[in-house]
Length: 196
Image (cartoon, rainbow, N blue to C red; front, side):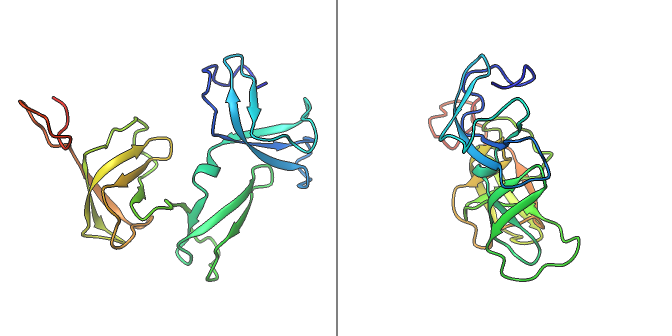
């Protein structure tokens, strides 16, 4: 059962990753396990997709996150790194896909795994479908000059899905502008228009 500070909305954490340090000793790593939350009730009780190797106790530490839904990062040297495990207690990532050596203090960014997706800036509002049907134009950095219609917006990750794949995949260096939805006043039967 989660503490009182957690949401009490049934289903809220379904799909989240629950990472546990089973013995509560941050210095050990062999007892850190991650499972997907399969059910969450209003009394803050949750169930996971499968059991842990041992039963969590009151000294177990936990982190709820969404990292398993977007397990991709990029650096200047490596554009598609897949994260296979995260230990929040020792700040260690287990990754695959490193093709070139990096350099000290090289920035790491979360990326989108699809050729039609793009991760917006962390300051983007977390409002469902806010940018759906808007236009996005890459004005600088990688992929500059491309324009797409936004087909969907996932606010938890601040990721847009474009109506077609990018010819040159934008990345963390890309600068962009999002313009408003087309407006229709009367006879708005086309799905391409915003509502009025």
